[in-house]
Image (cartoon, helix red, strand yellow):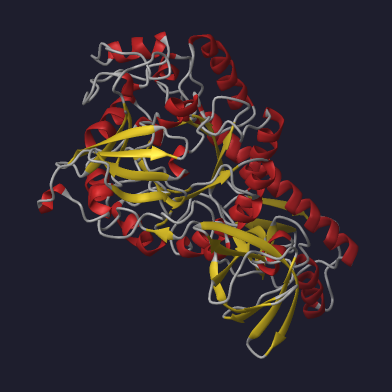
Length: 597
């Protein structure tokens, strides 16, 4: 049986979360005061409670990320935090550390984070047997693999559909910690994958010099949304818990419109006053990653920054302005970019004078730019201004029924409330009175409701003053929202607490990659028939460790695939500071492994 689907948007803070709901998200995921995989996106309990109250008006959910590995001395704080989150109305949690499965869990919806390295049916079935509600698949999954998983499990499946890509399998990257003691599994990733590297072999031959060899384009699954829905995916996740409010608005709106034809878990209709465009929002160019083939160009060696849309060609440089044969309309305060000595540089536009299709651009400071260079726009001021000032509003559809003895309101979720009309005289001019009712009941103003229909049930209706109808309308809508919130809360409180039942773990390796960072996690693994051979990488200095395993293979990318008969020379990477890494290649699985030299 088909289940309602969910568009899941990121929230750096309270404002981002409320914007996500307003612009079409069915749910948001947000960081708690601590223990989330984005340490710089923490929120107070008070702010999370405000988000919950707003989201639940639309039957939208709030998930809190608790997806770091935990220290022994943090476990009591996590246990306390879990109950505080439940008490303020949070719907679910996203977790990585198995120690949480040994805690006293409130009746949350529990999702296994993508940090749990979930990329096969065996791992999915494991979490299903534990009793979790959902698993978040690795981003490297193909459509074919996703279909197979959905077909063979009853647990809910969540996939990413948009945003930045980790080049490594999530939860299996130790490069940031190896480079500077900043653990990705502790929410402190320094993103060394976005740095410049040089690729060379054991004979000293240099293949690529000083490029962003591990930096991927951003993910966009928009062309395959229907296939993912039909495969059985329940939740469609947008990456971006460090992104700003305009990113959340624009991307949430874009995917909400694409998913409007499907049944969704939340209520309401979004009334837009702008047209979303994901090319106007931060991106490193887009790819569909490994959804359908391994031949697409998924990398961006030029820059990890946003280059933006092509804006034209420089045809002249004067003392204080640049002449550009423009392909887009450039406006003051736009952000422009260009490549100079292989670096992406940029400037702001102070003034523009157009002469036919040639734009005379006066920058805030004259850039090092020459005729013949391509120029790009990576910040569209007008688009972002309109988005920031957007009055886009989400509203719940209601129908009014006017009887001779009461007025009733019914919302799109079949929740209703009525006000009796006792003691009023019968209207003599019925048609005129109906017109007054129509006019006043339609005035929902800035409320969370819009009127779908007004029905006059009886041939006789009471005579009411305009002020009386307005007062009744306000009471109806206020009480209806109270009823909605009570209904949602009753449903939330009716959920039973999970009883996590240990199951046999599908062991593929028994070392630091299990990310066992505390005693309780180790004990839970033991209950799952795994005697952990090593603690986490962050606990102990482990020699010759895999710092990263990735499907982004530099041999394949550079036409040096060993399967094509190319000689197997040992390959290495070195960064700008001389830090050296060695590369190994798992050709059977078409994966590249990065280790310390």
